[in-house]
Image 1 (cartoon, rainbow, N blue to C red):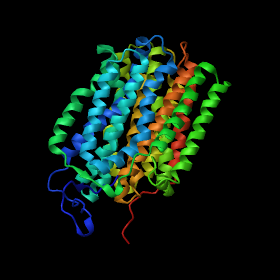
Image 2 (image 1 turned 180 degrees about the vertical axis):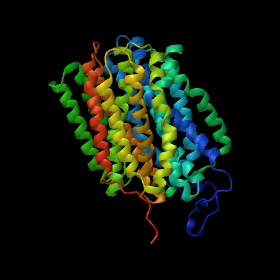
Image 3 (image 1 turned 60 degrees about the vertical axis):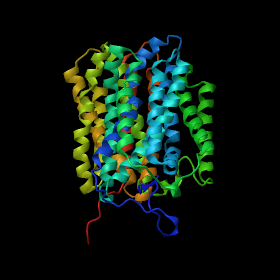
Image 4 (image 1 turned 90 degrees about the vertical axis):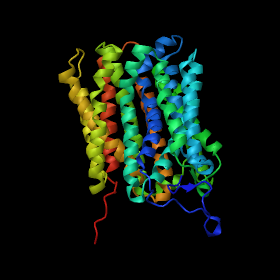
Length: 478
């Protein structure tokens, strides 16, 4: 994807090239940002809202195992991650507005089908379709936002766009717990419909069509399939370890198949002109380490929120609405912390935020590991940990989005951000898989959560270490 939008049917420059939109558009970019962000908010919300619905889904499909139900979450995330970059190129070819609205409509249709699903296989298939819609709309929305802002404001726009995504992902479990308890698990999907339809209606009126055929490419079907098989097989092996144990040949066979498929994708991507993930982006040192940190933090983020609901409902025996309210203070910190962090990053770069935020997040895990006990004591043993993890998420997630594109030329902002989002989704798949492997059995004890919090701390510290080489500080004038 390119950030330079070319109006459909616009005047041609010499040589047949279409000139880019001028840096400063006469209209305010914020209505465009709002419409694009609504759809992205719904996509990110959907990636975590089912953390709260996991128990309700198991009750709704009693014949399905924990591993089966985990694919309601992971099938969506795997397909979404694999299609993000190719979908961006389709938007460049066919028009960002057209692909964005098409993606929202597919996403809404799939949401309706999810809510109507009579059995878990149907639900997983509808989630795959939902992921296709999400992948179509996400990179198109970012390209639309970037084209709406002048060049000197685009880095800020990317950070805000990432903050909206991070807020939605953080709010998902809280919103999901209330909706599922009051109206049932199908409404975790139906809640997408009103805002999504508004985004389509207003988007058709407000958004400008643009495309960049020079950056377009056909869909990399082999690459997408290799990514889906690779990440899916890894997640399958990890999830199946809960039932079969780590000595199982089936578990290690699945993990080996995933590794081989990802190795085959790497080989394929080096020799195809438009791969599903452009590996040349990783030649930049900062981009390489930011994405490794994104993978690590994506795992920790998913494990934290998924684990919260297991702990609240299985150890403290909270009702689902009580658990949803109990986790809310952390997400509420995300936006104010992200706004303050964005201002700091604009002056000093992202490394301090990323390292400091990761350490704060690790302290949150250490707090839970040390303080959370078998008896409910929310104000003393839980709330301080939520404040730490919420502040850490607000510092880290938007900063990862901003740092990922900091060294890229403007023409690669879109594709660089899409790859970063895809890496984050892969991290989420792995986090969900490990959480199901650790906590998916019927008789949970406090000791099971000690392992989860230890993984949380380890991944947060790893994220901090991976962010040490990041260099995005503005250059001081000579």
